[in-house]
Length: 147
Image (cartoon, rainbow, N blue to C red):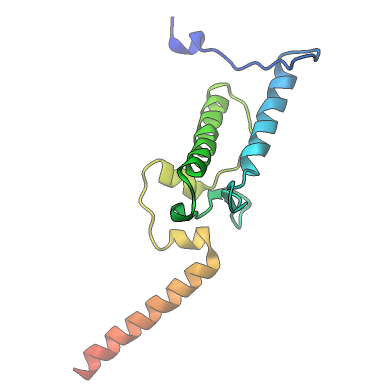
């Protein structure tokens, strides 16, 4: 017998409500995904996800120096729960409303980020870096010409 035929599917039943199966289970996935997307840092009330230009989610920058260890633990738990929900939805063949950025997937799978990935993350920041690179190239060309 293969592991696939032995796997356990998540099935949700709400207390004091009639019905089990696909409906309540999909509602559960939806509600948990909404809570994950809207989770805010306890002290700063900053959303832990940033909305990308393509309406996908990428982790927001968070200053770990300004947060207590307990607050960092809560944020870590949200990201961990996100991963577990995604893994379970994949194994149960369920769609969930948690559109993670392709850039985030690349990083999660071990791909190194480069300067061109910044354009996908923040086009205005990329524009600044591109202009700085052009200035650096011009200075380098100027330095070679003068000496």
